[in-house]
Length: 332
Image (spheres, rainbow, N blue to C red):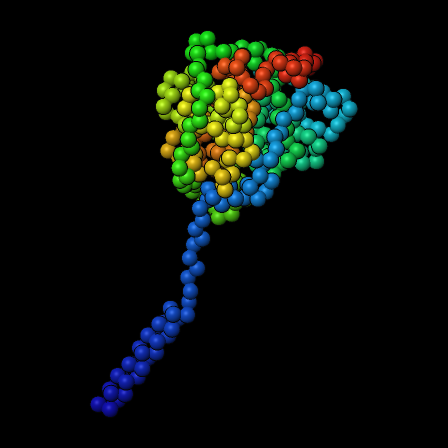
């Protein structure tokens, strides 16, 4: 009987010790909670703190300046992102044909950071503007877009035909202001990354893979169901009011209003945003930036040159020596 009591007492002591040990361990151990960030806000803060590219500079190079760089043997690279067929039919001497989706990997694999300039050439300058923006956001500050594309070099047809006053769809210009939305939330991103640099890598690769076709829209599509879109006029306010703007368009002043501390959050997250400028070059910069942040943003192709050419108060194709086809030689 005594032995049984001793055994029971020993058993209780062992069990009590185990319970105390387990409780003590569970109290001492701490579980690190997962890091939760607002990815879109983290990303825009990262971009604004690292050059604030869209609000501080552009990345265009004119055909005449590119020609000078070639003739003086400057250490440049030219990436022609047109179709392989059009590239083979005629391209700038020294240009390499690269598919747009491969630009990020091509830049890295070929150590293009060592070049003084990396010039991207497309048909009109708009797809190149889209692509160059993505590389600039990646931190490749030597990347440039050939303004007006190969139209300015040797093949002007696409810009010649895009120059229109909207004969089939006339536009009445509005000369009064339309209010911005009340500030809301940024879009929701779910890359699973926690730093701006990591989020940026995922988003830029995705946007480049989608291509400029997804990030652009033509005038006929916009005006077919106009109410589907939040139209952004990306001009100085004075020109927004005089000569005027697309009816219903809301003015966002370039290099100012799309900052986080300004009016970025007034853009809708539940509606397609269409950005238009004078030529489609400026909007081809804004669209991929906004898409990286999670907005459904599109660049209106050819800008005011394809909307109301005569009333366009800014840059026009074919006006001034810098905006005309140079008829420089091409090679096959």
